[in-house]
Image (tube, rainbow, N blue to C red; front, side, top):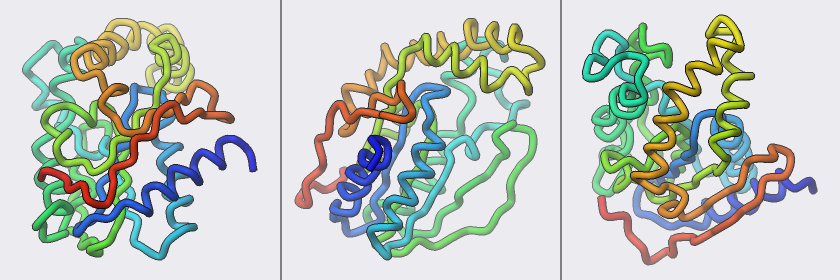
Length: 233
């Protein structure tokens, strides 16, 4: 078994073992270009291979605020990116609280296209009582969301990796490599640095994965919540 498959299998087995009287809410957190979406997609497959429980797969980028409402800060600033891009109230009230203790388990998995220009009027879903929510996104351990997760996974890469990977990934839609590099250097990386400094997500997460090498990620820390631990909300 290759290192990535082995790590995903280990993490999936740990998630399946978590016992809650409501759906288990798992955050896959990390900086931009950390590989969160791919990791979480593969983790979902690994979880499904080990259990018949429902797996709810959500990308938090589908809960952004409309672009025209992001007026608190200059649109190209790190502050706008970090503080004014995602609708944390909607993530909490439409996804995390319904799946938590005493929740009705009816949730939305999207309200806005990731570009922030088109509303998504998709159906409301109902999760099974023993479902597993796997949600990926940036800034998931911010104070607005942190109390509502049952397990926090942080994919750790360096900010130099964010700059390099992000530029390579986003240069097409941003118009050029130069434009992408500038946006990462002046907007995204400073916003990520503020999150790392203020929240210290790698310290707070129960699982920390070094994802610098996609083919061979390493589990740096695993502090699994025991069956007697109950999420506070």
